[in-house]
Image (cartoon, rainbow over all chains, first blue to last red):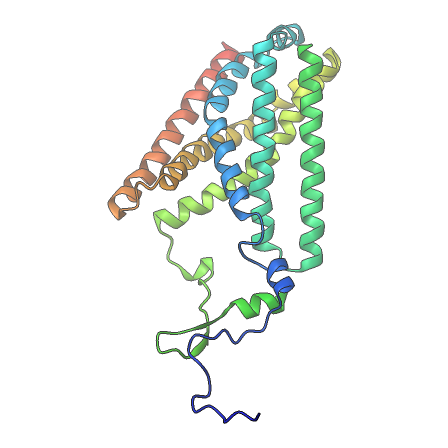
Length: 139
Length: 145
């Protein structure tokens, strides 16, 4: 049955950009983990408020202090736990922040992918170095 | 994925005509304002502090390695370059700290009036400067007192 041609050339509420479901999922928008990223950045920043104050005014006493004084400061479960919290929150927060910087300024897909991989790798290495050092000093 | 980005930039104006959505002008187009400058400084200090984690990790690894390694990192921190870096990171840390709290207050839904965000911007700068001076003063007193 042949349909008669419609009078209006284009309905108003019709999206004319052709994108498959898969294309939409892999593309930009809410299908990615934007909310989690945003939320994790806020949670780590709230944690870092007291941790930063504690660290600055605790570690400042170690300026110029001998190695034994540093060992004595670290040799306390409270210091060990707070330092671990500080380092984990710092590197998580740093990773989230620098990821956005890369996504904002690196537009070539391949360079961006490699930059994000490098960021992930360097962050993980630095965080692990810090965590193992703190554990070695504290345990 | 340039084609996806292009597709997302297509929209309709109020008359229903298909148009390319406008992009924000680049930084150099705007006259600097307290809002934009503080925002840029927040990101810049975040990047600087990320670089600062290298010294934090070096300090921790050296402390866990032994007295000789620790003397190495302490010598670096006590050198003129070390002091300069510590000065910059102290300022950057307190700025990012207070500007971050300002962001959290915005996230909670407060402070969006022009009068409010101008006042909070000035408060961030003053608080960061005060804390940086205070921290550096204590640092000098401990190192040379």
